[in-house]
Length: 292
Image 1 (cartoon, rainbow, N blue to C red):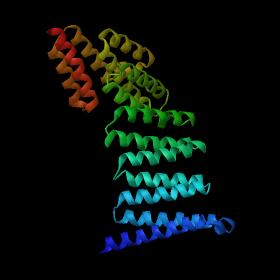
Image 2: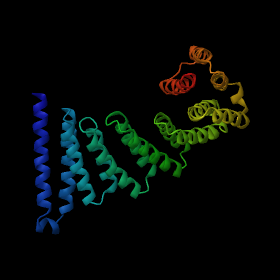
Image 3: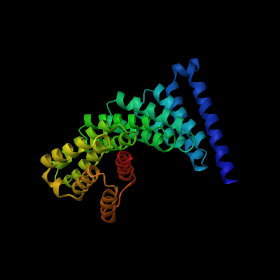
């Protein structure tokens, strides 16, 4: 009963809002405060949307927020319009991912028009996450992470930009776009090694770049490791660098057992994540292929 009561109330608020919008378009309203009627309608749509949220009718909530957003645009209230589109997007996330993306894109257009690039970047990340998890379209997720990184860089938010770029590198390597992944890992690693707080993570980025090189060509990987050691001497003493060197030796000797032992030894101290496991298996297959 509670649910149907709230839904009924929400529908009444929408009917009221629609009346206000209609009456704002009449000749007399045009002369005498049509905009205040639209403002009232915006408020009614927002109240209805929140009631729909309470009963988890996400599509209806998203639609009501969208109506409010469009009226805010008519009233030239850009900030309120963008906020309403974001609210609509968040509601649609739970019911209609594509519609959520459409609403967030509308909000991004408004924010970039207002010069609010940091907020626009945040919503590009939201869209990327929908493509990642709901629609499983990794190419589109990459494009939105790249756009977010671009906006963050423009606003000098380099650590936020790097977080987005690392997402891109992870996916690029999985899609065997190794050159793209290498460039990002090297760029982020180089900026991390000059930062006292991030220095420790630089070895991980150079490690990942080296593995991407290894997937392309063993000689490339050898040269890359030397380059990273020259660039960042602390890399030489890291377990990551030692592992890559052991793997290079195993590859050169065509020795699958020593390759497997080196990986196991590393994994017993630092657990391998899914990405590293994938890359190490790809490299192992190249040795197995050479042995056939």
